[in-house]
Image (cartoon, rainbow, N blue to C red; front, side, top):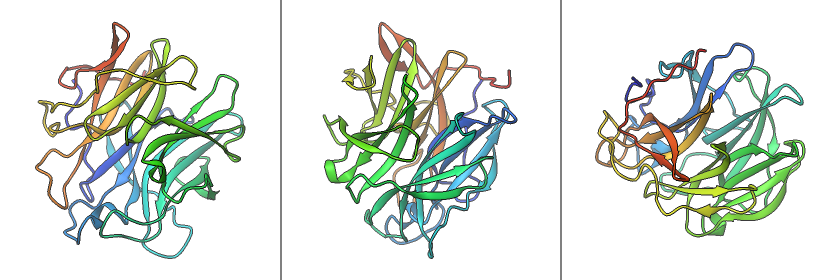
Length: 299
């Protein structure tokens, strides 16, 4: 059965905002995540700043080990990287990463937040391509999905627009055009869009579990009534709501990779990565985080 927790960061014990991608060249799986400095007793919330992007590796999806952290600095300082999103573009045989960036370290929730674009051929060494400009100084948490016509769409959180989920389009992953608000019914973060069971879905962290939206055209999203991962789980380290998740669809199954704060919230507080399986029942996306299931992505 899938281990719980799925993964803990062995350096700072603060793995958060995970995402998973399969490497084209060798078929291995890589988890990229915000490497919060949870075991550092520092002022305020500064353990959530100064974070690098951690990397864990797996050959089968259930056994993960730490490989290191990415070197993404492009200017002086101890800077902050959050919530990476990585996709492979077959058109240029290149990985593209979009990552939240804040210059420096803050003791409270502050600082100008931008989305930075990087490219890589191997997932380990990255070249900085520039900054996305959407007319806001507080944008974080990008996610990407390829549209049926081959172009790309990005969803992200704009804190200057009431923390709604906004979106933008690009023909080539470099030039982006702002399109508007995709989900504005409540404040949210960490959007993730995926296709599963004949529909397009978007999940967003609303700090009360994850809101679920569905769409037939990736343009108009309707929210289903029930949040997922709202109630505590029973597995080790799976207490509290599930937070900022990624969805990995593999062989017609959908797996949600999320993080939890398994202990009473203190500052700093450690976090663990968990995984559960998603199912569509009576047209609704559901998740039983306590259910046992098998994973073997090696074949």
